[in-house]
Image (cartoon, rainbow, N blue to C red; front, side, top):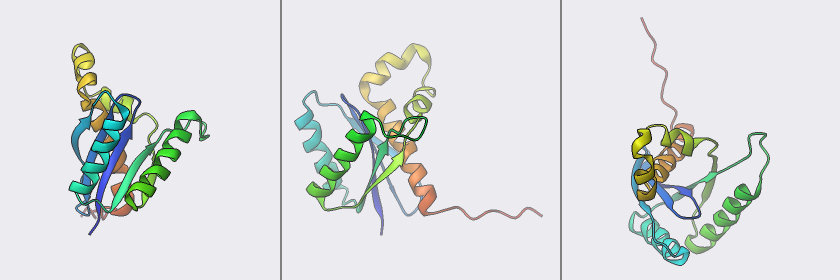
Length: 144
């Protein structure tokens, strides 16, 4: 049984989502602790509590498919997660997911919502859903 934790890693917040072989990603509360060490400990705790089998991490590639500094940070985080949890970490292209997630929030509410981590967790949900769609493609319906 596959149990996936989707991760949208940022400098201030870590957005999270959960999904399994049912193929549906659902957002979890974001990790918003001020200290990076506290966010790291909370991330490991969520992975263990949820008994995840796979981690799905957003990989922020540049628009020309190159790996810039943020993508290299994600790659280093993937290695750190593999070492800490002994689980496979799948890097998934996350270009524009934060923008897409933010677009679902009315403009006048974005500042307050951004601080809550809701946008980050929505982005993690989009990242994880992309991964789940690749793992469990939906059969095409034949129309009469």
